[in-house]
Length: 95
Image (tube, rainbow, N blue to C red):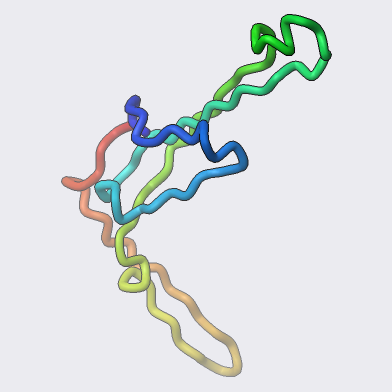
């Protein structure tokens, strides 16, 4: 995240868990890279010398205590959810 590698999931090949409370509030760049074997069965494949690799990046906004950022009301038989946009710019970093 943000150009650093806070976790490496080589021992957990099926996924990862992200804890927003462990990251500063604001905008961050999340990059996920993946490496796969080619599956061809060749000698190079069996030795781990061929495969596929790639990565994707997203800009994400981490908001701590989101339950404090919206109001829920019941009016005329409908649920109304209003987002209170109060994200402080001093906590926002450009990713």
